[in-house]
Image 1 (cartoon, rainbow, N blue to C red):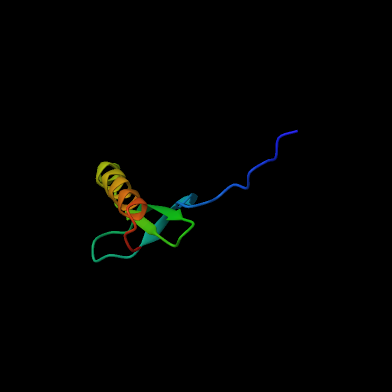
Image 2: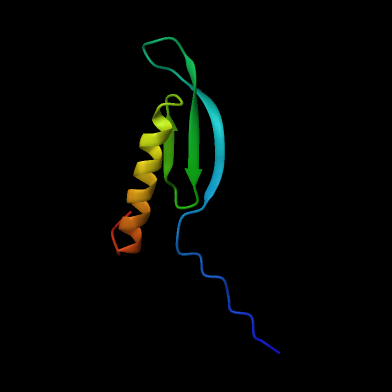
Length: 70
């Protein structure tokens, strides 16, 4: 019989994605909030910000894999 190896969680896992209203000097518009298990939260203004956020997440995960600080 094979022994099951414990699952090691070494990277952030997305825990929540939600829309929120944020007050700015401009009119109030819903924003997309992406929350990760290690406390990282991204606040995206609109659909166009998703690409920049994806690039940030890739760079963030790469830095963590290389031993960088959070």
